[in-house]
Amino acid sequence: MANREFYDCIIIGGGPGGLSAGIYALRASMRTVLIEKAVTGGQIVLSDEVENYPALGSLSGAELGQKFLQHAQDYNLEIVSQEVVELVPGLENHTVRLADGETIRAHAIILATGGSPRKLAVPGEDELYGKGVSYCAVCDGFFFRNKSVVVVGGGDSAAEESLYLAKLASKVYLIHRRDKLRASMILQERLFADPKIEILWNTTVSAILAEGEEVAAVTLEDTQTGETRHFPTEGVFVFVGFDPNNALVPAGIKLNADGYVCTDEKCETGIDGIFAIGDLREKYARQIVVSAGDGCTAALAAAHFVELRRHAQE
Ligand code: NAP
Image: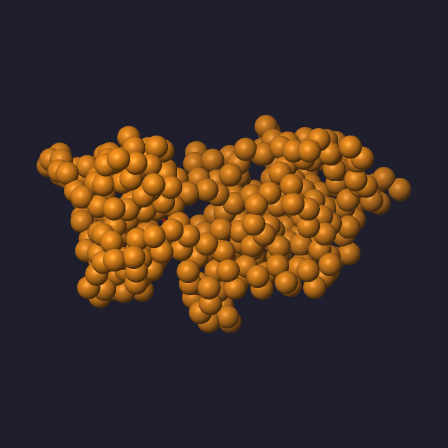
């Protein structure tokens, strides 16, 4: 397999952070490639509606993802559809190995691999995935029209997806382990006002049960009394948080206790020339606008780093 030429900057991940980094990297005249294994646009393309990306009002996640992609393409960002299997840091430059065996080297790497939905880790969850268990209301909600479903979680994702599902399902039971939601107030107000949504407080799902091949019920547990009950439902939507996709982060880069990458204010990790941005990076707010901001910061810092490297090697 022929090796590609050397790049100034390789961006791994094509969500809002990675695409924003691509725009800024090209504006800084860095020879840049972005590598994405799945859908360019990132997790947001699965969102029904995004209404907090400043200046754009309300639009679908797919539309916003397309806008990010189009903007990066306007700068002729090179995008490779491949899986990165390894990132090997080096003193002179860094090497990225792709699933097809190809290797690409660069002065700077921007890791923008985001995160993945966390599982509930209860009996029945894995076996019934795609048979009533889902992690994406926009993808699968259609199959639950006029059916009764449960949503598990208490954050922004659980709230947003419950509101979306309430437009399709006959009833949405939002199951939360505490007596207070973590979701933003504006979403909470909408949840409380929606007649199709009922919140079951202080409750967890301890098993997902099937009849034949499909989900038929869950076992609910009261977190205060420990009592359990059989609760019929046709769909289980799980939104209990998010784990960073940190498998490519090389040894020697510090992660916090939850697996997020620790960086400085330039989004640079402890290894020179390797940056981490977006939902992979330890930070206060996991928002699209913050990921885009991270992309800008890392690309500008990477451009400065590349310039110094070039001078040093002349
Ligand atoms: P999150 O904010 O971490 O919330 C996860 C929820 O799941 C929490 O309510 C948590 O309960 C509950 N939970 C965790 N593990 C559980 C378990 N094993 N069993 C039952 N419940 C469990 O995750 P998220 O909602 O996916 O959001 C992730 C990040 O993206 C957040 O920073 C969020 O603000 C952001 N986000 C923003 C938007 C938006 O702005 N429109 C939309 C989506 C996501 P506790 O509350 O008891 O911990």
